[in-house]
Image (cartoon, rainbow, N blue to C red; front, side, top):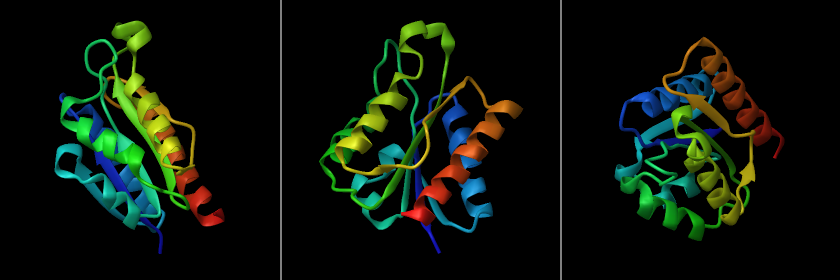
Length: 150
């Protein structure tokens, strides 16, 4: 059985919703999933999961979640060779060029940690609607397919 760990950071609750949707789909696909909030999670916990997912928000003008800065730094220092990664997050298109930039930053952190990208990152505007749920379900499905073929 594949294991997955989904970590989220949220202010409005939207990214917890994103994490819940991804977690539910991973469970439906037969994964054993742990879901935790970023400030309560040590990045090294990813070394115990086949699939590693971060669902961050972007603060202000492209800033990472303040409560997740240590996690972000620690993630970059890990060796996640052989682990599948994915990033999905909710943001607000109101912020223009800064829209959901934390998603890109966490994807780069996973790359630095040598994780295998399991699916293209997903960026959701505000709270997940039906289209976003379908995109997140497809994201989770691709993560599982990638992990199974690794």
